[in-house]
Amino acid sequence: MSKEEIVEEEEIIIRNYRTSDYEATLEILQQLHDKYDIGLEEDKWKKSSGLRQFKPNLKRITLIAELKETGEVVGMGMVEAVKNTLGQYIGYLDNWAVKKDYIGKQVGKILAERAVQILSSWGCDSIRINIGYGASDKLIKVFQKAGFNPILTVLEKKLEKDN
Image (cartoon, rainbow, N blue to C red):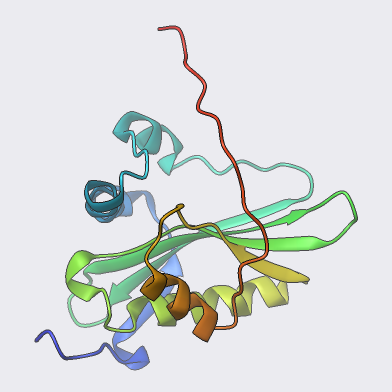
């Protein structure tokens, strides 16, 4: 695939995560971590890869973007809906990443469109994407083009753990 080519929707299968996707998703997240230091810890990712927490007021799936022709996993994202204290379902797109060679080729867009359909079918009132502070203006514009707008700033304090 050349740098200019985009991936057409018909060339992609969007499906649920399988435990056999562990290595491919780890590779994608590692690429993201290498570039943006997302706090990836392989042990924690491995422990949670097959774990799906079932909690009251929470719905969650992990979507995988796979090339139909080769079966290569080229994108991923966690989709969840949480009922807030006002009784509204808020959808979240989390751990959203595309394999380095497929960035800018519409894979993320195809994956996000499916996620929006799913969250809508779950009755979500809105959808949020958390992106790291200092994300590029280009990335923010991509999300704004898809209808997402900045609404809040989140502050975080890392806690030190005794080992």
